[in-house]
Amino acid sequence: MTAPSDKRDITFPSLPSIDQGQLDEAWAEAARQSAEYAPGERRALKERIKQLLKEQDAVLVAHYYTSDDLQQLAEETGGHVADSLEMARFGNEHPASTLVVAGVCFMGETAKILNPEKRVLMPDKRATCSLDLECPAEPFARFCDAHPDYTSVVYANTSAAVKARADWVVTSGIALPIIKHLATQQEKVLWAPDRHLGSYVQGRTGVDMLIWPGSCVVHEQFKADGIKKLHEKYPQAQVLVHPESPADVIALADVVDSTTGLIKASLNPEVQQFIVATEPGIFYKMKQASPRKTFLEAPSGGLGGSCESCLRCPWMAMNGLRNLARVLETGDQEITINEDVRRKALLPIQRMLDFAKQQRITMKDKGNA
Ligand code: SF4
View 1 (cartoon, rainbow, N blue to C red):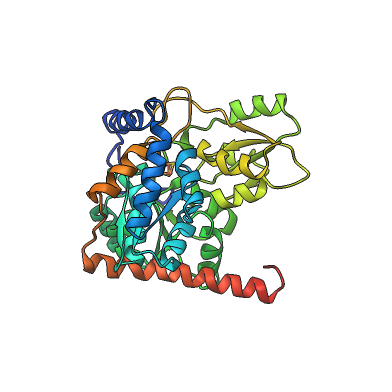
View 2 (tube, rainbow, N blue to C red):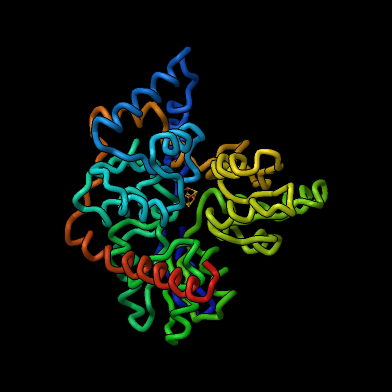
């Protein structure tokens, strides 16, 4: 990717491109995981996983974008299905000595950063994220060094090494309140890596922000024209949009929010139809809570990051029952992080968690909890 610059002619480092080979590799593993089961295989795998979780004092934490099977299994075994902030919080508070994180690598790393004494396993730790890939630690650190008067705020979808260099970590659910808070301190913000979420937050706060030009290969695919056409067919539908989507898609939204926020919005008893612009794994929770409602996938360009006919995240799709059972048997996908990096990365994450806690206390005091 060529080095882009912002309106002030600030040049960003050259970013690595996400090549089709990386995506093909992820899709190949995803296909192995979702290959048709032999009769009784799915049930046997689930029973085996349940037994192994018990034997190993392990708890399963799954992201909303993983398969229905994994979300269901997490719920049935006393684990949790959540967004990345909630996954980290749950793992931190749960007494199990092993955390099994079904999601992508930065989620496993965040769990390890918060729980150094616990063993953290993932079904396949090669499962990455385009945002993480597009924000390597060294260029990010150099860019921070070149702009020392900016407070660095990184999205959770980054490596431990990038977090270790940041002042704050945020998730999509808490990005806006934290940037608003920084605005009250007259801080200027160096934001990385998602350009769409960065622009959205910048537009809502007016804060002076340098925005790293990374993007999510899934959300980048949503197309405003397609959503408008679908909305003409379903005029009663509300449009729910994740803020990693392009600005013209966000402009069409009735609700712009994190995955958890979008699930909450889908509970609105006044609305029966929704056009949803985020990874379709989220439909498991939406349909579970509102089985009679209609949930429609927002149309996409159908190229690049996602397969031609769907908007699944290739790396989330690498998580399956087969590799989950295998990792519980072998333990070979354990997350490890250099202790110095872990300690440094903990500080901006803890800052976010403390801010979130303080916000909940404030909301409670105001009677809004
Ligand atoms: S959906 Fe996008 S942001 Fe989420 S893990 Fe996949 S590539 Fe990363």
